[in-house]
Amino acid sequence: MDVEIGKDAVKVLSQCSSMLDEMKFEALAQAGCSLILDKERSEETYLGPLLDKDTNVELVKDVCSTLACLFLEAAKNDVSLESLALFLRSRCSFLDKKATTIAGIFADRKAELRAHLSATANHSYFYKLSGVEWKLDYCVSSSEDRTLKEFLYHICLKKWISEAEQEDDTAIQFVCSEEELQDLVSRLKDACKSVERAGEHH
Image (cartoon, rainbow, N blue to C red; front, side, top):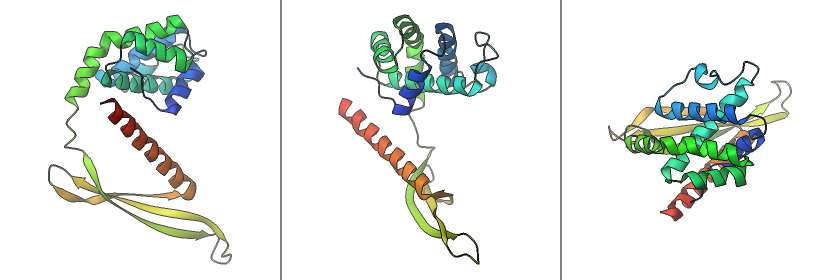
């Protein structure tokens, strides 16, 4: 069974496959599991004893969180050690030994990861989206110079509280540029495609 993770996640792992050695990847894979199962959030989780002080912290965090996402997706689909190793080799340019090591860490904790997913399957306490409102503002350079500078979108996401079965008064409001709005829409479309693909497997 294939593993479905975003292009950005594949890109992170592919770019770092040759930048970090097997030992560091092993430490990050263990840290990725800790992020999910042990809820560790301190920097020590990322910069453990196997990671030297010269390592780029942001790079390490990116790889660690990406591995955590990979493990969750693989656990959700009950992916085998062999399938995950194949994915890492074919899609992320991992060498055989490194791919097998990372897949082995996942396999050792797959049962825990699947139990964790089962325990968190009830999302009734999360907010649900009940509506969207938007308003377009025209920004000009100054009160004297009325030249159009940019468009700004005011977005309001109305929330629904499942347990209370009522709309929440505190909506999520934010402002974004046209480019940022297009990026948001594009990411949401990617999410829809992921849901469609997941539906095809079940």
